[in-house]
Length: 300
Image 1 (cartoon, rainbow, N blue to C red):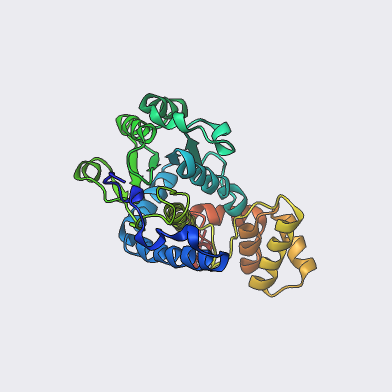
Image 2 (image 1 turned 90 degrees about the vertical axis):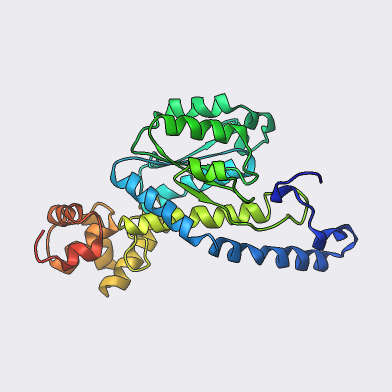
């Protein structure tokens, strides 16, 4: 394909895919997809560093901001949108910025990715500063919108990272605080980075935000104790969590949750320590929101 980017190379294993029957196509695509988790594992140290940068930003009152175009931008917006209902975060804590704006989420705005100035403007509009961590996502590594956004973010004092699926240049490595490059290889359909590269992107973003939220105390054990009770499904889940952790019947779990204003962590600390909601909130605040620390400390 006369292009040095790994994401644009032809995959010799799929060169005759148009001759395959449905089951053979499924087997081919699945065989390629199995390469993705190992590619992500090989960059685990960079992913862990990005997680640390996100946690540092959050603890300073800053934000994690994803910037991308096309599939990369949509995945960033998706991961950001899932944080409030999953972990009870403020919607501004993790932000997804996509070239072309909201319209690009449902309809391709391909030309929007070509303007570095527009990417820079998006960082100005968000008021990016030194407390923020901005992660650019461009699986090809070349999207002008993303590079423009990251250059402006760095100029405004933010930490920056880059996620791509082709070998990074020395300049890229020298420019950013972290570079994550899971090399998933050529796509089944040449250049269709919504496939393996998109899967790798989602795995990496899920890991960064999930790990950072765990570090912030939004998970106790492996339960999402900071979820927002905003619907019947989440009310049920919150009650079941308290029933499991405290070994109490549902009516007691419901009563605790009501007294704690729908906050599972508060209800948990209240019950375990035999204290009121206000004191439970104070203990949690004093221990960075981490339940196990609030429970283990001899005093608030």
